[in-house]
Length: 294
Image (cartoon, rainbow, N blue to C red):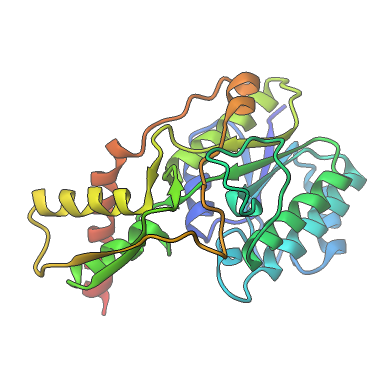
């Protein structure tokens, strides 16, 4: 009997990365079209689940939008619908979340057991989605991620690249610390967990994943700038302006302790540094394609 996995989103950068990883696996991947499933209707979701009977759901729907003003509703609503439907038909769920659930406690590394105390709208949305799922779905994994970077979408890497190649001044905070995690690396971890669940793993709860290489925001920006200089990719001279004060609207640290993912699933963290040049080249390729299509 084939293992059926429902992926809730394949349009966002994270959803596309997950789909790309899952297509390599011997799963029957369910990606419902709009005509098959109305995500705003919990009864439509229940009907779909009863008809197709997936063995596992991986949810990243609304993850990208949750970081933007007014975009948090999709994350919360999908979490509520999935929690209700999964509880009724008893389907395990892997739900993607974020370091933004943490507050201004000043901790250098957040563990899975640390209390959540979000400081902004996106953090509050991620925290609410987590609470809804944890309260209703016995077999769940809430997978929190640090700074996610990639060649697509709006993230720290793409914002810096756009500014650097335009010769603009970039403002970064030297107090903010994170562990940049490539989209493909985050997807690798979610798929590794899915494969072990397929093989009978029975480990649930909150898990963390981030890269093995922590840095400050300005260190990441400087590393990227040096790479662009080495590759002779700059046509104008950008500059970096430093902010040296604690932020009030996000956690000082996005570094996550990943003990449970390592102990329960054997997942080893990878460095973001070897992937930086390939990501830059992919971003440049994407930009050229967009220009050619215009």
